Image (tube, rainbow, N blue to C red):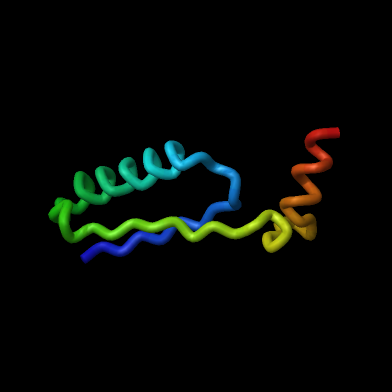
Length: 67
């Protein structure tokens, strides 16, 4: 049973998340021929003030990009 966990910053729409989950499911099915009913895919979201890259919080980077 393939298990796929996707980590994302919050902010995507339900439609975007559904499209991502469907695309990953199809990719797993096609690449390793896993039965569709055995594939599990989920999204783990976290707020931008709980993720840092290169010493900058994602929330701070987002604010700087808006300026």
